[in-house]
Every structure is written in C-alpha cells, then in structure tokens.
Amino acid sequence: MSALHTVQTATAHAAIAIAAQNGQEFDPNKVTPGPEGFIATAVFAAAVITLGFLLVKRLRRNGYRSEIREEIAAELAETGTTPAGGSTSESGSADAGSADGSGAVPDSSGSRPDGA
Image 1 (cartoon, rainbow, N blue to C red):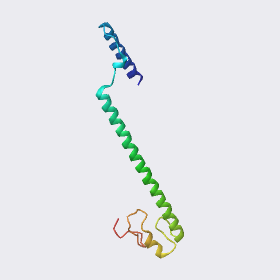
Image 2: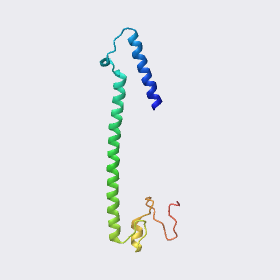
Image 3: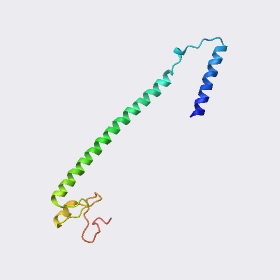
C-alpha cells in the first residue's frame, strides 16, 4: 500500500505543478469526485445496508434454531429419550427419528429402510 500511496502523491504533486506552470490557480473547493464518485459511494452504501439486513436475518434465524433445539432437548429429557435417536424404551425410538434429520428410522439391524 505504501508504494501505491507514493505513486498517488507523486501524481497529485505533478498535476498541481503542471497547473501552476500554465498560470492556472489551483482551487481545492472545485476538486470533486464527480458523478462517478457519487455512484460508487451510493453502490457501496447500498451493499453495506443489504449486508446488514442479511446479517440480521441470519442472526435471528440462528437464534430461533437454538431456541427450538433447547425446547426439543428439554422435551426429550422429560420423556427420557436421547437426542441421537436412541431411547430408554421401545416407543421412544420410533418417535425420535434419525440423527441425520431425514426422518428415516433405523431398524434393529442398524440399516435404514430407505437404503442409505
């Protein structure tokens, strides 16, 4: 970055020197980024605002998911089943489902009925 800064500084000094040689007075109030700078700033601001909305959406989603997981863990603790799909009774294993979330319940041999 320091090399880029050096080049930019040298270019600015050269432009000022050329303008001074031509007899033009340098007015720092007339130096503006123009419409290109405005558009670039507006696009950047819109991107930052959009990313902010997406971040809030993901944070809320993760918060809701953690609340649901806590509720499920509390319910499973009350019924005596384990979160991985195993249970202390035969009726609990049919209701719990599989650990991968597919809904397929492994049979007693350990294989799933869907063949996966």
